[in-house]
Image (cartoon, rainbow, N blue to C red; front, side, top):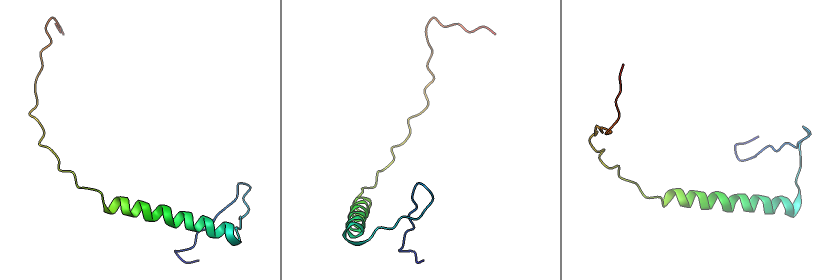
Length: 67
């Protein structure tokens, strides 16, 4: 088996085989989908991270903590 082949298994543990036009259509849909995903990744823009704001300590009025 080469890296371009994919093994498909059925639910009952037996290997399923798809022949003819049905298999060709399935392969074509897969190729179309992965081409779209590659294009989406290739056209993704890089986000610049913003500087983190300084930590701010907040005091809640009326809250008393006794240890």
